[in-house]
Length: 367
Image (tube, rainbow, N blue to C red; front, side):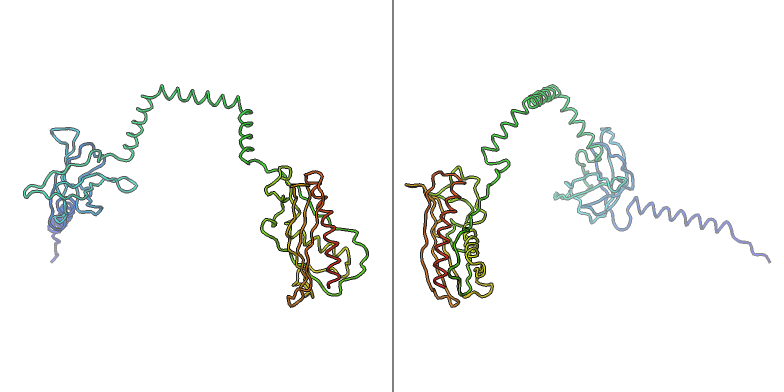
């Protein structure tokens, strides 16, 4: 016996299942979803571009429901009325702020709820009034802003034209007087000490050459450390006894600081006297038997009374144990006919020659 399939029954069952699924989805997305729901009326005082039934409702950024109904206000065509369904546990208040936000790259609109402290009276839920311009997108806001800027420019077109004309006149005046302006700026720069600094002229102290034959040579090794001096003498400038600088020496520089220059030229002088027994530069090299310690007291130009250059040194000879073997003061001066760098350096050369000869003779005898 052939079994006949109940096609009508099967088709009816499938159709019913499909309708049930669609009904459930519609109910879930539009009428309440899971759990108890509360509906609120919302009124927008302007357009709500893109807002659709089923759009999400966010409270403090959290999705709590959806839009269930949209329509125009019958008493004012500029207003839009909406009904939203949210979870009953959502703390919606009578003064909760309502807005419209556009999310994602496609700008999908959602209704936003924030804050509020006034609890609504029992009974019918209150109507929430959205903020003015809540439905205004970023594009529309930019258009409105540009429209306002255009209005301002249009209202002030006359003064703007006058300002631009004045700027052009000022610019033309600057162009015609560029040379004068450059001269004024150069003068100001020079007056304030700016601009390219003047090139300094460097002078060296001459080493004595004719020190006579070495009648007696150094019998022990000798070192000449860098001389000591007060801070004022630790300089390359020409010093004056009265203090300050002479305008004629503004660009003057010694080849090195005064203590280093005196040390180098004293060693050179000993070498010119007896190169075979020349002293070392420091006591650390070769463990010299003696050290010639120099303290510079004066190295300057004196202008009070007869103008002259003055050199004053304090010299001591000590052995390896630090015992002072001999000591003396060596001082000299040289008349200066003209206070200028070249003449001053020549006078210092002559004074230093006498100092070097005296120190060499004394040192050779003491060591």
